[in-house]
Amino acid sequence: MKSYHKGHELDGLAKIWLDDDNVFFVWGAARSGSGFVKQYKDEICIQKIFDKDTKKQGGCIENIDVVMFEPKYMKRNTKIIICTNFYTEVKIELSGCGYRENIDFIEYAAFKQIWYYYTKNVILLPRVDLSITNKCTLRCEKCNMLMPYFRNPEHKDLKTIKQDLDVLFQWVDVVEDFMILGGEPLLYPNLVELLQYIKEHYQSKIKLLHMFTNGTCTIGEDLLKISEELSIVYDLSDYTVGLPQLRDRIDKFEAELKKGKIKVERKVQEYWQDFGYPEVNHKNYTEDERILHFHNCRAPFRGLYDRKLYYCHLEASAVQAGFMEESESCFVELDKLNRGNKVEIIELDRGYSKKGYPGFCLKCDGCESKKRIPVAKQWKRKI
Image (cartoon, rainbow, N blue to C red; front, side, top):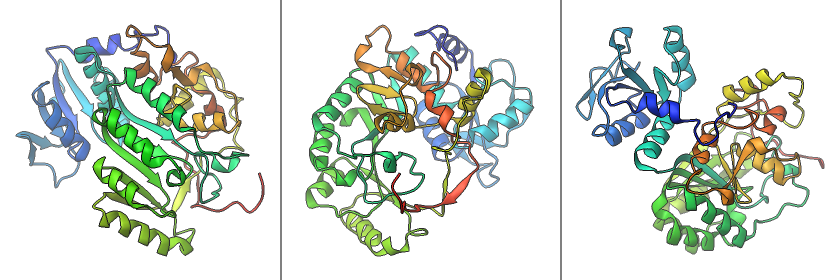
């Protein structure tokens, strides 16, 4: 979305969604919806919870009934907050009934950011990704962090990473999901020291800390200890469909984590989504087509790099790899903010920028890509 009133892009939404006369419905009775209801039931008037699952209908969450959506519920000042990963599908259904995005219904992350900022002066980000190394134990084609394209992969300087964290949390009060990734982050020689720094300075600002790993490294006692202290969730990418020879190593890795009472979410991936780079080129798109392409993507991952918060962590990685020049439309310079304009962080997260899309959109098919490729196919040639 193009930014026309920098620092005030969300004022209109706040006026619509924070009206005291509003009556709210929550769409989604699963984890996101139930969590939202529990958090906001005493802050806003939630009348009912919509869910298509007949097994959930007839039940209740926090004494609020779960029912099937029907247009009869929509009256003056009624609003729907969508709390599901299937936002696009719900949006299509509601739009087909004549309801308007951001006026009659809104994504729950956007509502939360508006509510926190305009009622509490708090900056909340749903997700931030921090890549700490460009080195990896694998060399996967179509790696979405572009690792094979780094000519001279290296570990990030620990001092620089700490500075990035400091300038981010100078302005950001809450990060719901903070992701540590690479490359393979367990290769990072200063990982325990980095986690200790996060624990000492920013643990209270991070709701959930994630470690993305392919499970091919060993994990030492010091890392196990700090991981348990920080309640880190290990997002274990299981690529054994494409690399069956890794199964024993990954099984052992998972067992070590569980032995240390550390939460592991092992995700077996049968295929990868193909974002299209480096072959894709959308330079022939008109400006309106570029903005629409960006809007349809709905990338959820913000990248922290070089004291900047990038809208898309793929672009942050592409800039580091020298794959493209960064554009002013893709980041906020965190060390140039002040108390008066810190809301620009939320505006970036909601997709507002000077051009209306990040530069990397021209080299990427986006998260809506329907292309599928074999998982973790290894490069057998130099790039």
